[in-house]
Image (cartoon, rainbow, N blue to C red; front, top):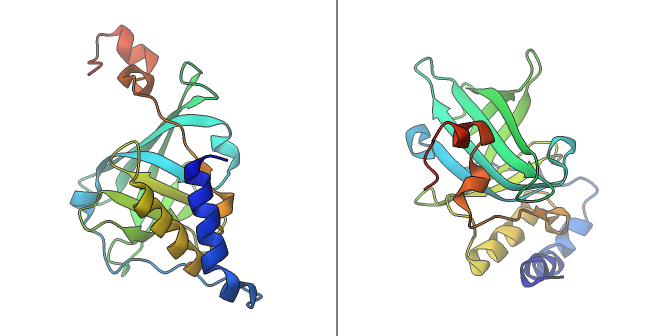
Amino acid sequence: MNRRDSLCTMATCVASPSLLLNMTAPKPKCVPQVDLKRYMGDWFEIGRYPNPWQKDYVAVKTNYRLRKDGKIDFQSTGRKKAFDGTFKEQKATAKIVSGSKNTRWKVSFIWPTSAHYWVIELGDNYEYSVVGQPDHKRLWILSREKTLDPALQQGICERLVGHGYKPERIEWTKHSEDPSVYIKPEQKKRGFSKK
C-alpha cells in the first residue's frame, strides 16, 4: 500500500464511525454553484470508483467544451493498462439540470440514456473537482494537474464519507510525464504539437 492509499484508508477509519450507525448512506450534496466558463477545459483524473468502461485505464484526461446552445461537449481519453497501451476515447454530451445552478448535469454517451453528474466539491480556484452520483455508484476526483497535494487529497477523502462514499474503494489513476501519452496516435502522425 503506497502513501496515498494509506492516507485515504486512515481518513476512512477516522471519519466513518458515525456512518456505520446508519443503514442508508447520506445523499451527496452539490456545491452551491458552478461557473461553467471556469469549469471548462482539461482535467486529469486523480481517482475514481471502479466502473466497467474504465477498467485498467491509466493516463485518463477529460475535456469539457461549452457549446452555443448551452450544452457541453464531453471527451474522455486514456490508455489501456499501460502508458504505451491502446489509446481509448469516449465522447458524450451533457445538459445542465434546470435550477441546479450548473451543479447537476445529465451526461449522455448513447442517446437516449443519460447519467447523473453532480459536482459535490470544487476548489476555490477551480483547481480540483469531485464528481459523484446520487446513488453513489460512480465517483471521480479531477484536477487541473496530474497530482494533488497529499493534505488536500486526505481532506477530500475525509469529506467524501460525509457524502456517503467509501474512500477505500477509490482506484488511483497513474499518469505519465510524457505529453505524447495523452495525444491520439492519429493526431501525432498529422504533426500535432507534443508540447
